[in-house]
Amino acid sequence: MTVFDLMRNALLAGLGAQEKVKEFIDELVKKGELSESQGAKLVKEWTDKADKSTEQFSKSINDVVTKTLDMMSLPSKEDLSKLDQHVQSLSARVSKLEAAGGEAPKKG
Image 1 (cartoon, rainbow, N blue to C red):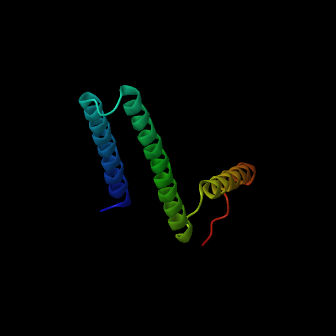
Image 2: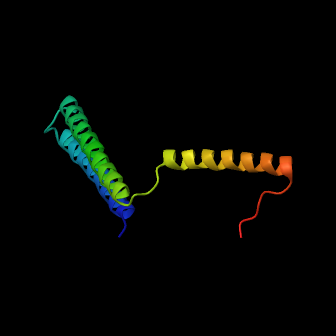
């Protein structure tokens, strides 16, 4: 199971739990055990806590992925951009040299 699958399953479980909590609170309101305002307040509190937990979960996953990528020593987007600029500069210089004196010297 990939990290993506784990994240997807956790988020879906969270959404399912959120729906169940809403249904449970709605049922309590219907039975008269909670007023509508109390039910709405509970749903809001639970939703706020769930949102905060989701943010923390996302941050944790982001931290793990970032650390993993750092350990792999992959080039950053900035590194690749600098390298691309350097290649373009060298290509332009080679083109100028070829235009000025014929072909560029061949390495053998």
